Length: 90
Image 1 (tube, one colour):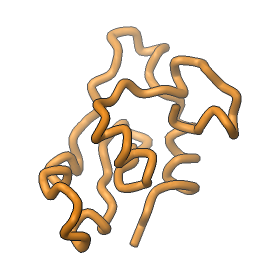
Image 2 (cartoon, rainbow, N blue to C red; image 1 turned 90 degrees about the horizontal axis):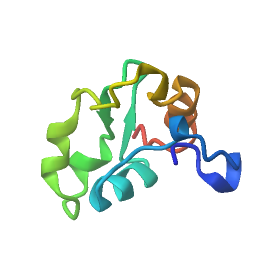
Image 3 (spheres, rainbow, N blue to C red; image 1 turned 180 degrees about the horizontal axis):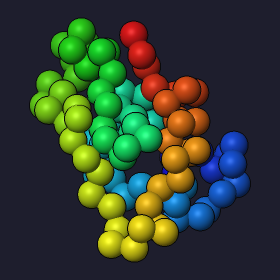
């Protein structure tokens, strides 16, 4: 869930992402987010914390690979919520 279910109670597929475990964890911890243009944005915390996998920095600026059906792409409002409420800007 982009906006966690405990806040949104929203199981709509447009409030969800299919991620591997590592990406799911980094998204949930606010170390990565998505822009309004469906691009990955990495937190500066990835570069200053030596305990985190450095290869995650290579995701910065990459486009999300979404479903073929445009109506199933994630809600922009959900991505904005994540960016404001979870993403670590510093």
